[in-house]
Length: 102
Image 1 (cartoon, rainbow, N blue to C red):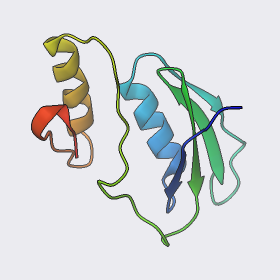
Image 2 (cartoon, one colour; image 1 turned 30 degrees about the horizontal axis):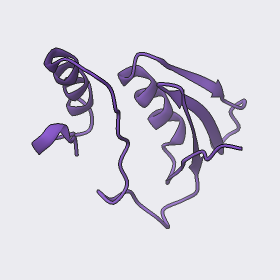
Image 3 (cartoon, rainbow, N blue to C red; image 1 turned 30 degrees about the vertical axis):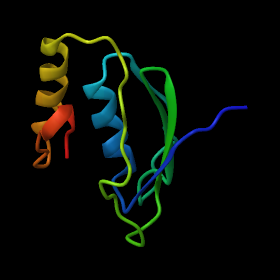
């Protein structure tokens, strides 16, 4: 049995999945149901081998810095800079101290 993080979005689950998969090289989309008039209700994907699910659940909950995706690896500074550059180029992402990206 494994634990799969489940991310709640208002309406952006598919967009977020596609974006996250573009940032991390060893990533893949594992389930994207056919679109209905409202888009996909839930999607599944892997980032660096970690399975995740995302749901379009409405505006009831939002992300805060209390949830983080952490990449543990022996990376070079150029690898870290590349990932931070990909993340900060989208929707106002801001690099923070110690390699965090808000």
